[in-house]
Amino acid sequence: MTGILIVFPKAEDGKSIRNLLVRHGYDVAAVCTLGSQVLNDMDMMNSGIIISGYRYPDMHYMELKESLPPGFDMLLLASARVCAECADPDIICVTMPLKVQDLMSTLEMMCMNQMRRRKRLRSVPKERSESEKRILREAKAVLMERNRMSEEEAHRYIQKCSMDSGTSLVETAQMVLTMTKL
Image 1 (cartoon, one colour):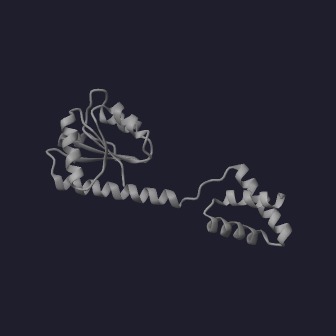
Image 2 (image 1 turned 30 degrees about the vertical axis):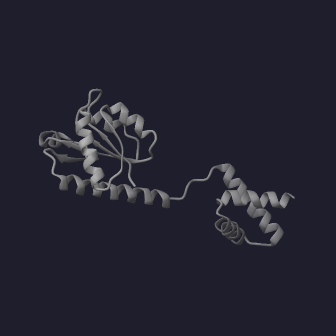
């Protein structure tokens, strides 16, 4: 589920939005009245959606947008004039007065985009450090020498053992090296 943070200068406005979202099945992580509170709450999240008014006591929505780490999207709830002035294509705008259906369909679209982005990031293989690459090379070399395997066979063997045991490739390679030193 996507984490949602709400920031409005008036706590009552933020709580009203939160209650509306909760009634529609969304989980709201926090309701804030300051941009700095949002930045603090974001530190505990990897990604999420910020539902925002356009001005808070300590900053403007554009200042908050510029401070957002990757993985966070902003949904601006503001007047038609403010939405028309918003030049940032990464900020999604819903005009006030708020229509519940507009908010819900926009939020649903943003949540789907967040899920797609997380899925795409999970499918990208992580880059291994030089020490991890060295451990894998050494383990394959041991298997190739002792068991007369090709490099591809040694790699597949480490890969299969890794999947069977539920450990990472590097951990399995480390176990192979430990076992051969006994």
